[in-house]
Image (tube, rainbow, N blue to C red):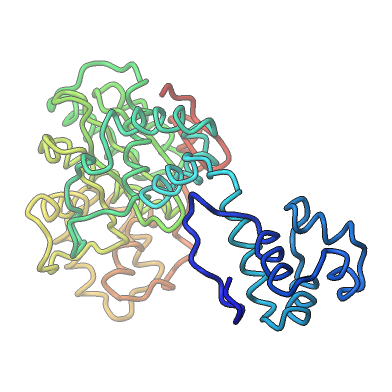
Length: 379
């Protein structure tokens, strides 16, 4: 430090405690440590400890030294802070690694959901790589969703997808064939009358060779379902059931099963669908695969043309009695009729009381992760 109180540059290899600069000031003035103690009105022992580096310079002492030497308090406080930083231990390299992982994927939430175990960094990284099936960050591939303007999915969506795949790998089910699935679809059609019959869906799909998994979505993640393949003959359908509505369940399920039947998504990690009740066919950015899946879902319970004819005849004053009658003739639960007409009317409060839930019935019989439970899986 020069006579004007300006700190001279000090190379890191020759860094010294602030006390060295105090000693320089004393020598320049011909003062002893006892003289400085007198000036500061403190004990000589206090000065000795500061000069020797055994004690640091507090904010209060920095102001006192500034008065004694005619410098700024920030100068002494800065010298002390610089010395402390140089003396501080280097941070654990795991901090940077965890920051990179959390930036790329919702690691903390994945741990809280029980998908990963909170462990030492090298073990956590090993779990991460196994969870994503040996892929690195830039190797995690996926297919574009139908109604997204960007081909990319969020880290939360991808983590959810790989959780579905992880759980599906542990399932032991019969061999899949398109013929079996066609038979299963006919069986599923008979279940759309009673909401309680949803519990039979997992077993019907199992017999067809389709792995069916329900995984609660992660926060800030909008997903309805996914069609993914563990192998060319091992299809998986995953659902979030984020909307606990019977009409939504059947639409999403049939949408994904159509992807399976058509072999969509093979060669990629999977087709993630954020349908969010966008069941119209006028979306200009909708792929042919998605349009086909949508139309199959819309026509599963009853002919779309039949519904449109009913809607044209009864609109705009469609009564509850009319809906119940149409549902009875079509042999479906009224919730499915109400759901489609709500979309046509753009009125989602219309006859809302008929939109019954299904989740509790479904979860009695299927593999579920989330909603207060953690499914067992092997990393």
